[in-house]
Every structure is written in C-alpha cells, then in structure tokens.
Image (cartoon, rainbow, N blue to C red; front, side):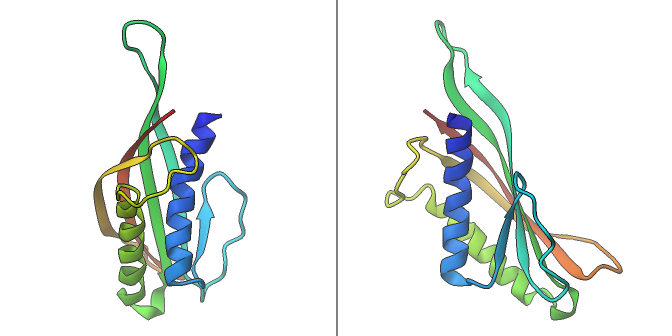
Length: 142
C-alpha cells in the first residue's frame, strides 16, 4: 500500500496548493476516470509514474520509490499564455513546498522532489486548449 501512499502524498500536495491559489482550476489525476471540463475551462492533468519500487541493499529489499510527476496545464487557446504561466508558477511552488522543512508528511513516505522542468509549450494546432507541461522527478520511501 505504500505506492498508494506515495502517490497520494504527491497528488495532495499539488492539489492543495492549486486550490488555495485558484479554486476554479480542476486537477485531474491519471488514475481516475474523468470528463474533460469543457472548452472554456482551465485544468491540470497530473500523472505520477513510478520507475523504481524497491532498493536491494545487502539483505532484504526496502521500499524506495522514484519516478516522475508530469503536470499538463490546459488553458483555453484564446486566452494566450498568461493563465498557463500563472498555473505553472503555482505548480512549481507546490512541488517545491514538498521539500520545505514546513511540509507535513501525513502519509509517512518522506517524498522529495528533484529538479523541476518547464513550463514547456506543447504545440497543438486546431485544438480548444493551449497545453504546457511542468515535470519533475521524485523519490519516496516507507
């Protein structure tokens, strides 16, 4: 169940910060069904992908997780990049706050974020939304 706790800790940190700054922005997680919010609404698609689940020191395996968090920022195409950049800044703050000494680890998985990349624009022509991406690597353990 610690994989679930690691995912929950990361998702909750991002969603809490985003809702505090802009409660109108929906966060859609990759592991839940969803309906696209609509052409005029901004939203974030958050994906947590694990690349490692254990570490094998001499002796028994221990839980040590690593992976990537990818946040697809979707804003209506006719609004330009301003709103997208504002959301990206909030996401970067949320991810950075996970490493802060004031972060409360309610899931007991000690998440840590490494270098944050983005926002990077994704060229989508003839679509209702402009997309940019913020991503980073993470580690967590139990």
